[in-house]
Image 1 (cartoon, rainbow, N blue to C red):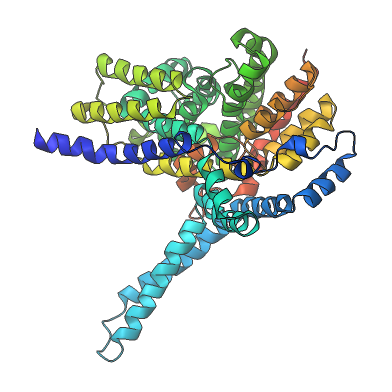
Image 2: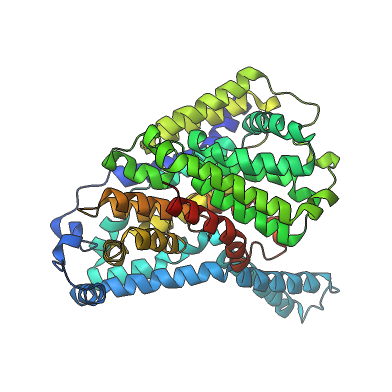
Length: 508
């Protein structure tokens, strides 16, 4: 009994950390007027009617910090594209460290220099590994951003700005990822997708089509982060472990990112970019199905069919192995599966209340400990890294309103859709739609266009959609020692993105 309680408390420690974050986010003291005007509110600029370039220049003159914040944000984006290079440097230092360790023991007079060299190689390998973690990038660049705010605005404003940021979405993503990656949920998802794969006799190609077609649509019901986690984990066991060709791997991850982004548009409560505007614009599930959902399903089917036809020879060469079975010779009791589904349902229902989400997660970890024989250890490394990524992105994103708002309002619906698609590649699509919801006088066509562009472009980069870092974290070990290459990911996602954009533009 005592050991079980200790185990529960040990596993609950990350939850306590999340709870502290949520308290910090919602329980801070009200900001004074000086803090309330940072970042500079859009109405202060009073530049309605001015050309776009004049607006941007004028806003920089009004508050020079705008330019500084955007330069730091741009450098962070460039860093995400260079992450693979940093990981390569880290592996170089690791190799040198291993070579030094294999050398004969040094003499007494050379021992100090030898161990200093060992420490040097180890230190820099860890530093470059950290710099190469895509999920850590925006957190790293919070350091220069905080320094800039402190230097230009004062330490009080820096403290109130960061404390006042809403961390609900990062907390929600951490919890939903952890629950969705649990053994009973994977067992349930595999069973559901297996029924579809059995139509094609359970071949690797049939599993691929099942996961890539049905899996993303789950995001409309169990949320996109959960769908991404389940699809990525099933792709590992049913596809990537069979060692497909590298071009097919990039085509697969590109499809996965795009399709999870658009697969959450069948409802109004599951996709972050939709959630940001649904309440403000009075969109419900029927509205989403009529204007987005059926087009997204058609886009998924067309893009998957095109990739399957192009790589048909590669699929025929794949042979299932014993390791491709996720949970052979074991069934999870239906009561445990149902309990996990209820936990997901409650977390989704409470998604806007960080404290409730964290409390539910604590009970979930206790339940996992109590049903240990039917569980695997809940790994929090991936979910916490993704949450750290989103938290950093939200803090940076709050300082980018000054240029996103005038860019969006200067475009007609077609330009707005294409512009939102491009902007989404450099910013989280939920941030794009949220900022659009703040723009006064948006027409119905403009609203549809900006959301269509935001979800269509959600797979072009790892930062374009909140669940993408989760998928990359799970799959990156199958893309070589340097992980997923940002440019090759962009190429893999380009075709399904174009298909989606064309359908959203042309279909009524």
